[in-house]
Amino acid sequence: MKVKLRQERCKECGICVDACPKKAISFSDEISITGYRPVVVDDDQCIGCGICYTMCPDWVFEITGE
Image 1 (cartoon, rainbow, N blue to C red):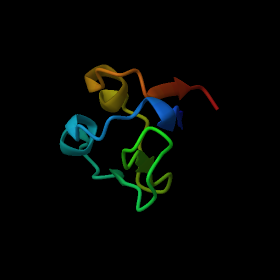
Image 2: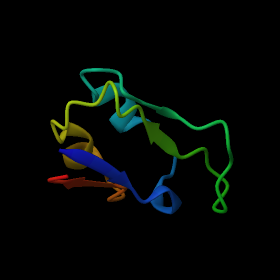
Image 3: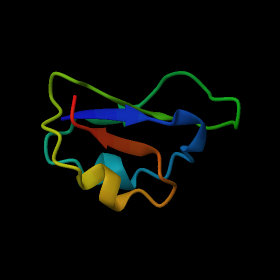
Image 4: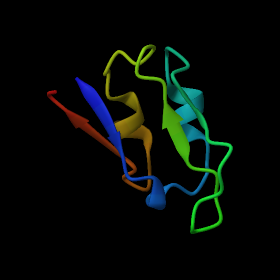
């Protein structure tokens, strides 16, 4: 499983960061066009559990079978 991000939707709420069991999600150092620091995923730490997808109120995450 792989996580794809739609960073332009991220509003820096932090729900996914707190919910990730592997602490694979963090905030970017970059500011998006919408004025927020979008999340980034460490692919080496991510286990593809989908908790981020389930918890995100802004549909930032997409879980793929890749």
